[in-house]
Length: 332
Image (cartoon, rainbow, N blue to C red; front, side, top):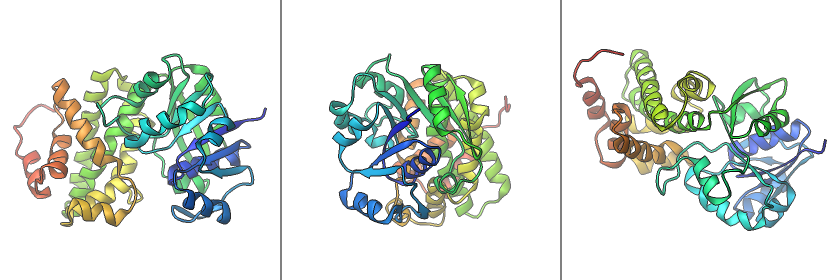
């Protein structure tokens, strides 16, 4: 079978998935918005800016032309940041066929209204459009380097989940399928907020006890919001929930965690973002998650304090003290 996939977004994660799919025998076209960056990828046959030292397979091509991307394949995998997700699909839509299938590895909410990304796809295309999210405990460099990894693919149509699984699954990349798109989306978005919180705590010099408490109580917050929005509780105990949360809260490959570390060490938001030099999804997700919690009257104290640090100038140490000073209560 001639397997072709068009991947939108030439950052670290889009590049890693492009390498994975090509390594699995797919014909891959990787799109990026910056023609100079794409020209460098074509010349170097690697992404020196984000994944240096990891060569492209021969069946991985690159382009900066949306028309070329749209004509290449009916299967689209979006790896753009959440704040650009809707805009880039709007720009690409005129070049797509009516039979397009859309998957995404983007973790976050639509910043316009806090909606989930599958709702954006349904709005722009159709509720009948095959749609899926890829999520789980994954760092791009480890995937591109062919280190053992497992992810969840949640889709609105089981055949589409199986199709993506067949294209990406390998001896080193294990795929699990799910029908719970909402749960997987919420887990992937909110864990970035909690990774910032964990980074702040470590930057302040607190220990493993603090980090473990933040992860555990943070998972409770994810479950509260996710179930309220229609997700299934079991999903949050799996790869796209607990697994992804553990990864991003405990390893410095996580940009969100490193951003939190910088804040805890006394750097301001702009300085911390400039230091990392890549998208930090948790910054956007903190605002959107906080607003959703307020809208649905859901108690999410860690998210709330993280939001106040990022958007109201609250001192990180004060945020921790606010959490510790909360009224005693039953854990359950």
